[in-house]
Length: 106
Image 1 (cartoon, rainbow, N blue to C red):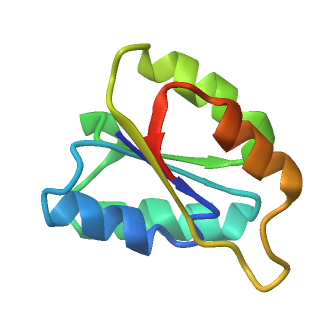
Image 2 (image 1 turned 135 degrees about the horizontal axis):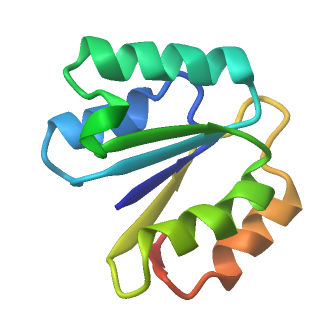
Image 3 (image 1 turned 60 degrees about the horizontal axis):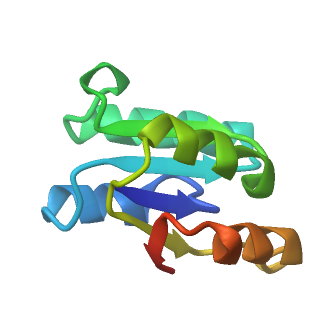
C-alpha cells in the first residue's frame, strides 16, 4: 500500500501502481481540483475507485492519514511518498508520518 501524500494529480502513485511496485494507492492532497484530476487520471489509466486499487482524498494530510491507515488495516506493508508543493511540507504532516508505526518507509 502506497500513501501518496501531497499527490496532486496522482502521477507518482499511479506510476508506481502501473509499474507493479505497489498493489494499492491512497492519494491525499489538500486541493479538491487536483484530487478530481487524480480520479480522472486513475480512470484513464484503467484504475477506477470501484476496483479498490486507488483512492484519492481531498484533505489536509495530517488529518486524513490516521483514518486511511485504520481503513487499510494493521499488519499491511505501507510506504509513504511525499511530493509537496512549493510551500513545502507542513511539520504536522512530518510528525504524523513519523509517528505512524505501520508505515515502513517514507
